[in-house]
Image (tube, rainbow, N blue to C red; front, side, top):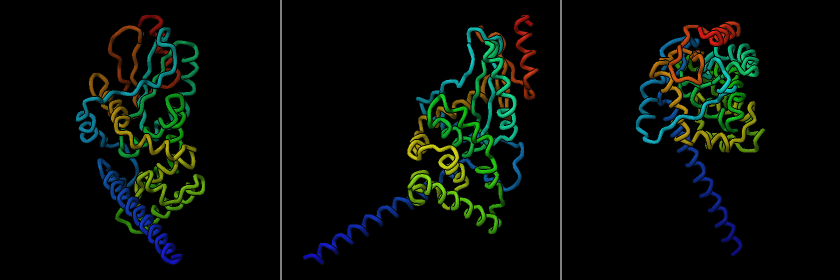
Length: 296
């Protein structure tokens, strides 16, 4: 009787492990499909080129009746501001990182003075990286979004640069997989989850080009893995983010580069703004505010 019970217990454990393994395999298969969807895999140095966000992402939003945009991440008083400056940034954009790190803190002085309404918006230039980074930056809510997004911008060497390799070179491909595996082990130590559990929760196949980004959110941003999983699985939330890019590309804005600056003087009054052809540094924004005060 005792031997029968032991045999039955071992059989149950075997079946449970088999089901878990199959679940992970299915998750990896789905993740591989997602990684290929609308992804122009990097094979050389990152450069300014055609954005890959238009066709497929547009279809993703337009086929949904209830797609609505996220609220603006805005700083300042809309009632007193002389100028509204909307900045569109992509998580993969090196120039955006420099602007966010050097210029945005200076612009906050104008915000505190009541003269500037500063709106920070994500732009999906390269999927899946920009989309995933934006989704994850909202994992702790509205108040923490810009801080988390800024950490993605300032740490390209950890989650983006290693992805830029020749996928046809077996040695480079193996080096990337090894780097991803090492990062997963570190994430496992930090969270208490096994590597397999992390892969299953965040849909990370062996050579997932966005794998380091997802692991970075755990090891460097300190986010809860369940919170990350929740925002990544929320398709309505994903569509709301994509609406921000569609809004930027359409209408009078026609944004097709980052960082992009969209300026509206006297934002209290209805009217269209102007898309700037170059980055606006602190002094240029001060000049715009002074012009607005003088009704120029």
